Length: 384
Image 1 (cartoon, rainbow, N blue to C red):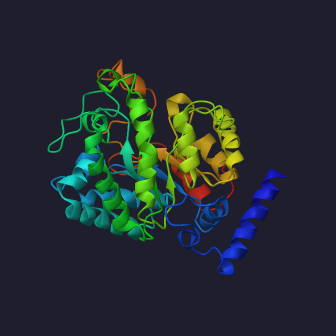
Image 2 (cartoon, helix red, strand yellow):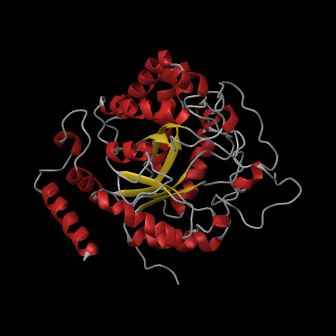
Image 3 (cartoon, rainbow, N blue to C red):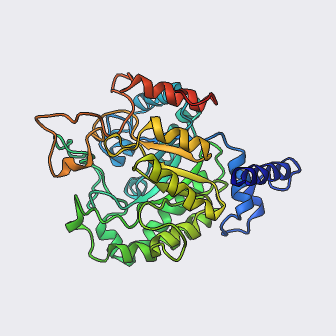
């Protein structure tokens, strides 16, 4: 019955779109307002099933190295997005950074435009991430340090950094960044969506926790609604979201204050899950109560039980977008597991890769995974 109701809702939204009633959500919603359920579902009904990866080119250790003028590499981006296209992926989740925009707003916009042109060539529409609470809280422009041997994501940096987050006088700079970036691409159909803040209440307990502000969660909790408002002030045609990733999602009342803000402010609901398929499906069913499109913006950690073989067929069954962590193994070293922060894999390699899909030469880590992704994104039945 639930599947039938979903199909009926989608059919109704499509009929409205054909009639011209809901052809463009941004024309229906009040300026600066969250999309209604009908507008969000009408938007999702017009999209191909979103499947892709969190992307940083293999020769970049973090989002700064990806986007700074000195290290921006369209040739590598083109090559690696071509590999993604070859297995049927149609989106990438791509992290931006406020410091790069501040250094040279027009130059950063030109590089974003160049990235979008390459992505469009490969029929890929990215989800851009504005802020991120994960890993190193002290980002610095310029050359980035080399990867720490044997350590997962050893150079990733937060946005904004701790010093800016702790100083409310700096927030106008963040507002200018959000409005500048979103405003520049608010009506660009090459952009799929905006993820305004990645894991906003991540305390980095296993890595940089001692360097994060002691009241970090409270600071971000106060700032996150403002970030949504700044982005909405530019009237983007694309939906806004911020993915829930921990806690009890059985109701708004059981959620953390941060998760409630994320759910109540998002046009489409996004979430992270790196667990076994049973938990993934339970999380999906919990979030279906909000009657909005669902996109899993992080999954696939082989050593933790989250694999393409089990999760992707479930995502398609529930019509949930699926964006795994990592495309090409490289300087981010996310093929190494999280516990490498406590036990670096220097003399030994993990039994299986944790994240990532391709070797640096474009060969799939597991040919079977590539076949599964290719089959499911082409609409074929799940492979046995």
